[in-house]
Image (cartoon, rainbow, N blue to C red; front, side, top):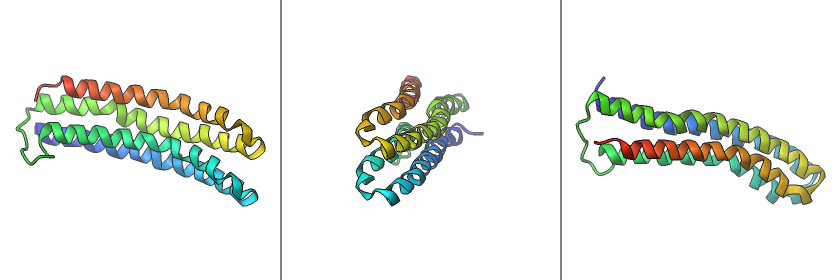
Length: 156
């Protein structure tokens, strides 16, 4: 495989896998929130806040994909001739956010869905529900930082 194909594969994996995780997580929380809203429509704002949390991993993957596309010249129209080693390096650098983004968004969705249960019974405890879900976010942020640091360390 050529270097450019491997690099594009890395960008695609970062975007697609983290996006799948975010879609799953956001959907899971939305299902839980819909039940609460049926009983108490005034809790829409609180539940929407929890639902938005697992969506950030998809943003992180998209950011990583854009960085890869910019570094290899897809954005800007000046595609660089990459060696297979450079391509593999970019592919490997995309994996932290691709894999951690996928899994952390799913688990953050589960934590936020449980937080919906807290809001349903004790809406004044929204902050605690958010903290439980945001703790999972820490690992997505670390994976994003690792991917970005590796990408900027690769000479292209």
